[in-house]
Length: 484
Figure 1 (cartoon, rainbow, N blue to C red):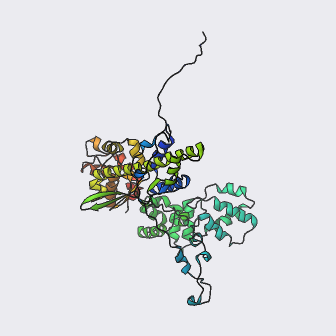
Figure 2 (cartoon, rainbow, N blue to C red):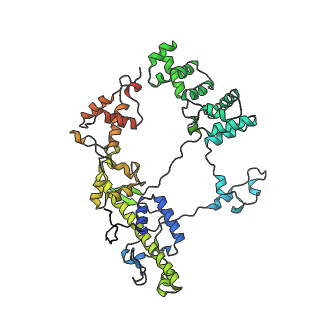
Figure 3 (cartoon, rainbow, N blue to C red):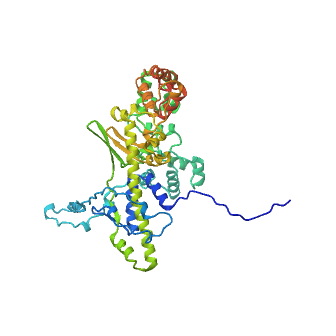
């Protein structure tokens, strides 16, 4: 029997994410710098927004509900105070005019003063970091090469990764070029001897050998150890190396010091990872033995609704289209002001709760960090876990003992379920690192032994847990840490 098709009405409820709500959520996740940039952009796009000269937005008379007809939110929803007024300092560009032309033979006191307009731009005064590829190509242009060799060399250089190693098979690069294998090998050798030495190598052995052979005082023993016993050197098997090469352990260790002075990732010498600077969202200061929380409001302007457009809304001038435009911009302006205020308040609440729960950390250091999860803070301040998660994303706290990301303070407890005391993961890392740092290098501590020693302090963790955190810190196993 065929099924019948029919039409019917069904009433359901669902949560709709309005644009205003999406903006409020987005503000919670933004860093301090991103938020100030967003405010600046909104002030350009929304004529209703302007900086206040001390007048509070609460003092601005709001239009009635009849003037603003909206379904998503009403003006009555926004009754908060404004943010703290930020200060802005102008850069003294005139100071650049005091410099003079170094190539001129005229005495400084007789030289005509230069105006700021005649000076080179600030961008031209600031040197830019040169990447590895550009640095190698600059040296390449000083060599006398044929067009085919030059094309191969450029292709080779652009195939290098940030560490300076070739990423594609050499045979494949040669096959794509128009030169013979012997010529290609000569070009590779030439690039390997560019600064930094060792780039364009396929393996770490090849890279270190290039550097070892270029030393002013070459060490044949060090070169042999790199070529034949690099793995043994990593595991510190000095006895095997000594026996194989017919030299004493002391000479092996002397050669090891030479090898340790080489760079396994030469490309990083030219194109190191850029330092990422952060602007703290929260400052913690100790005042009279108490830790005081202060939200960073630098660069956050005090916002208010423009009186000009407010009067335009009251007078109902400009026709329906103008009125609709003003109403829309007013809603956006009021919601932004409220969202910024809520963001700052929420960050403050979370920061105060963190400080209250981590007193030992702020007084005695990172080794006293307590286990704490998002749920703990969320329940304490009466907010949802997802809100706390957004607030702690990309937010940093400047404290008397350093700057930390807010997420740093959230760690699940380890060891408590096994009958011991709960300990934060970061604290466990510090304890493992301390124990390994104080060990006897001739008899390094195994993961099992570290687990046993921790248990004497009521920190009950399994061997595999110790191994996990040791590997996270990049510490070698006991067999590879052993030194004779």
